Amino acid sequence: MGNWIIRWAFDKPMYTPGDTASINFWLENAGDTFLHLSDIEMKFDFGTYHLQSVQGIVSPQTSTLMGRINLALPTHIVGQKVFTLKYRIHEYVSGNWSDLGIHSAPSGFWIGIYPSPLYTAFLSRGLRIEDRVIGDSIAEMIREWGFNTVTIGIEVHASEHEVDIKVREYIQSSDGLIAIATPRFLDALSGLWRALEWYHAELGIAFGVDKPLLILNDSKVSMSGLPSYLTQSGHVPKIEFDSSNLESLRAQLSAVMPGFREWVAAKRAQEFQDTLKRIAVGSLAFIGGIALLNGIAGNVSGTSRKG
Image (tube, rainbow, N blue to C red; front, side, top):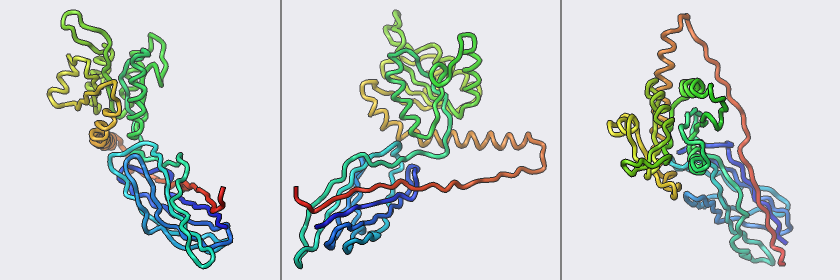
């Protein structure tokens, strides 16, 4: 009777977009017949990988490395990505190879794909429950692109008389500002929806200190004032989204966020160079460390026992 365990291990616990993931596969034959593994398939929501080179025969009571495969990950995909595993097993019984068919592993296996390094984005957004329903989902998308998000009243609490001080403090210390313009009130004169006034103020503070900016504008909101000027003049990129279809926004962020990260990185580099010029020291020493981390491992088991 055939009993087996397929094991795998990724070479890293997390990857960056466009990275190459290396995976080792083993077949442990816990039964008393020869087994042949083939047709391994890893299926993600962004595509399917057919691992044709991972195959081989394993004798009873033996564990054998089936192969090492390199997967080229997409450049535009981020987040915790779940995959399913399919494979084919043959068993050698009474002088013949018997096809035990395609087996599907339970779902729930995943890898993490996150940009590096991690930056901090001040997220200008409304705090009402209507705004949070949209804003919380968008904040999670932004975090998938390698940003810690900070909003006064959500991640940072402040008393009423501290709010303006905290806003300036956290915008100053952030790497960039992302504004989410959601409908706040209906302008009686124009009949158009306007955004929260704080959105204009926080955007203005960030623009004044030359922070990288990105505006996410609900399609129902009519943009005016400084935000309108910045987007129309080309100083600040804008994504218009439909709050009833946030998955479409996720796709748009995939096109914009790599460039926004480059803007942040360039700004950081310039600030670093400016800081060095102001430091009156002979030299600076930087010590880097390497953390040794185990890759993510998993396994599935099967048997040829009937019933």
